[in-house]
Image (cartoon, rainbow, N blue to C red; front, side, top):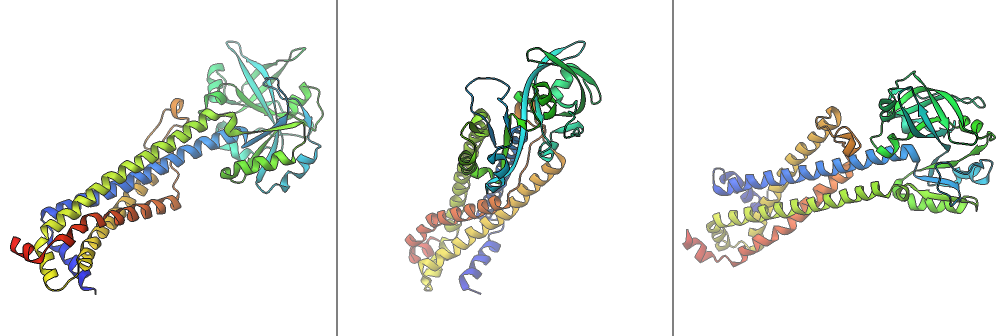
Length: 405
């Protein structure tokens, strides 16, 4: 074993009960709390971002393609799906799924209440698995090729306002000339926590809208497009733009709901600020701890130098101690942080108000690559700053330090 590593271990054992031992314990706890706080912060941040994004994407996709139109309306101009874009969309390597839809405005009426809603008609190409987690009661309706289904899925907010449950019937009056109405059946109830969706969107069969508008079976209002990787959204946008017909337009979900994605970016900035604060506190404690170790071991440093030890060898003793303290703190902090995240993910001990946070409990999303990088960054930064306190070892003279004892 290297002599100086041996001395370093002996120092740690011999320091038990001393003031420097207390400071070392504080340093271990500080590192542990710091890395645990970072792991939890990043897990919660990614959980929030993932949950909110999934909710928005399940209702609108990553990209939306419609006919180019300057009018502001809830309803799209219909166009035929018998186009080169629809038949060849799988050639775009960034696109995972394409599904057609139609919107139509109307009024839901019961004996006590009347509210305005937007019926979102979906086709058989609709990926129900992406929306499934929003469904809190009932189930999805079945669709046929030609006969429109009169089943609908409404939000929990609408069901409370109209006092409707799964299996109930409700009249819907459609805004058109002449006005028309249909008796619809509540097949399921969903909840996203996003008010602008939950207050007005109901989901039904696209064939129902086609029949009401006297349209053929190939007519659609638009396409919802899901990309394989959200980080490559801009690349997918360019692919879609290049392939779609000249009279179409494409819109990114980030442009359609900028307030939500701006809020997510604001969360990113808060976590970065927390990261800086934790590093500053941890570094200060580690520097103070090493300084105290050096002061308490001034005589030993003088003796080692008198016996022929170089400054670099003596510095290595205290550097090694500092790194061991850091590693111990990282181990404990990872156990605390990951353990808390796993408990919260499974048991949801910390609830949230859905009206303010879009979900009913603190979400967790553990990314092992992020955890590894946080540990590596913490170890690297602390290892670098440890060079600051050990610089004083170069100024310790053997004669004075031994006489000091």
